[in-house]
Length: 234
Ligand SMILES: C[S@@+](CC[C@H](N)C(=O)[O-])C[C@H]1O[C@@H](n2cnc3c(N)ncnc32)[C@H](O)[C@@H]1O
Image (cartoon, rainbow, N blue to C red; front, side):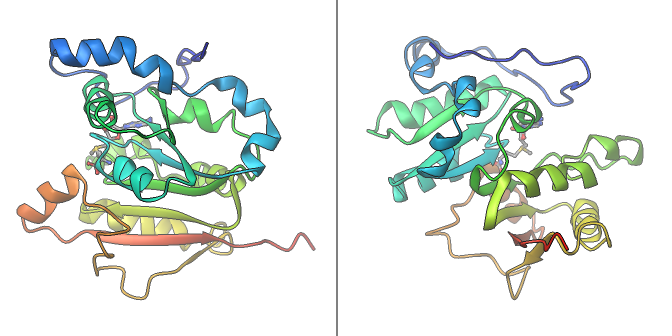
């Protein structure tokens, strides 16, 4: 049986947990399908588990378009999706419910609870697409990208592995680029893409709902792939 950690008060979640009530079919999937896909926190203690397979973590998967497509295209990899928004999780369950996929696990909560438990060098890929931009200055501290968070992801990635990031918000674009170029961070990651404004091939980087909304509104997203640099301790 899977166990879920309760959110700690020091990790206040700023986004919504739920918008509309789940429909009957979604409620059935929540009761029957979600328990079979729940991430088991005990796996965090099993170091071999992380070493014997390729594991990708998607943070804030929304309705799960990118996560689900990637899982179908790469059946040899494990995809852990983190999403505290109940209606988003229900949308992913609807996709999974009709297919035979056995390489998705769901952590339906604040990703920071999971990041605090995962062992060092456990992940082969991290994905953060169109994260909440929190445009008001007084809300910038709520943004996922912060110096300590970048260091945490660096610790959790295996050497040479990558972090996929995209956003359409101009303020958040500047924020991300400037955070990754500070003296503290610039040697931890190397950005891999030649043209960061060019959309990557959709066959390996599926379109998400928020990306579609951004493109329809005429905004230009930024697409980054940061590779973890191996830092020489001497
Ligand atoms: C703007 S939406 C983008 C969703 C999706 N990635 C897309 O591109 O369509 C941001 C998502 O991040 C989720 N989120 C916000 N804070 C989070 C947290 N602390 N941990 C995990 N997900 C979070 C929200 O619930 C929301 O679904």
